[in-house]
Length: 94
Image (cartoon, rainbow, N blue to C red):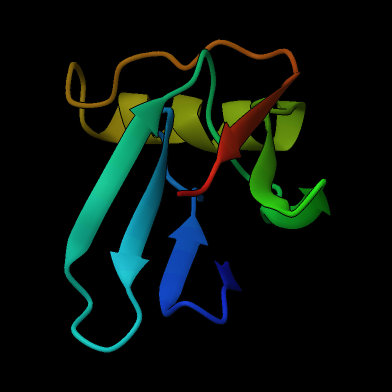
């Protein structure tokens, strides 16, 4: 997870393949965006020419894929496969 001075909390950490932004005080979901794989890495932030950006790696690794397989064996059909691989997603903040 990562928090911003503007009161946002960014996180992935789930197999829904999305990055999420929450209100840091209320905990309400403010925004989410799909990515091609699960997000395990923490988001980071940087600034270019006064504009703030959030970046995150989307990529489900072997350990997570093994855990996903175990869940699928215990609860067939409830946990769809999450593709492995890696890509970097960058979002501009307003």
